[in-house]
Length: 78
Image 1 (cartoon, helix red, strand yellow):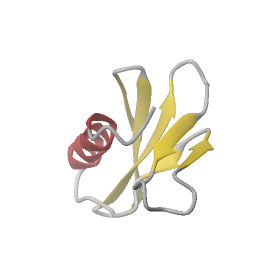
Image 2: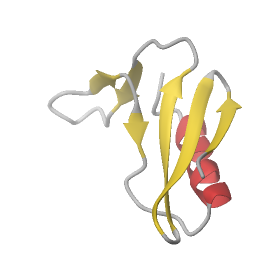
Image 3: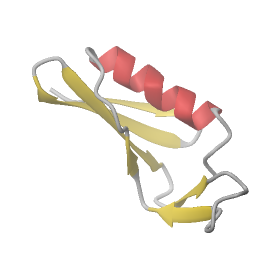
Image 4: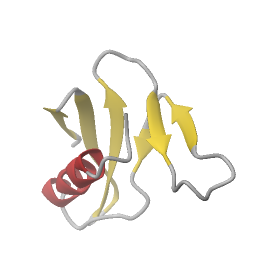
């Protein structure tokens, strides 16, 4: 069963791809695109997307949600 929470203007949805492999899907509550800020030395310093998904699985839904919150708080998304 998916777990959904709201956090700082984002919707975080944790879902289990297979047992103990939880990932998170992040999108803005208002439906606008997320801007991802990349390092300044990158050829393309930013890109936008309607949503992002965590790159690595976590063992629980709570851990996947916390990972998403850390990404939001990490100042790499707008």
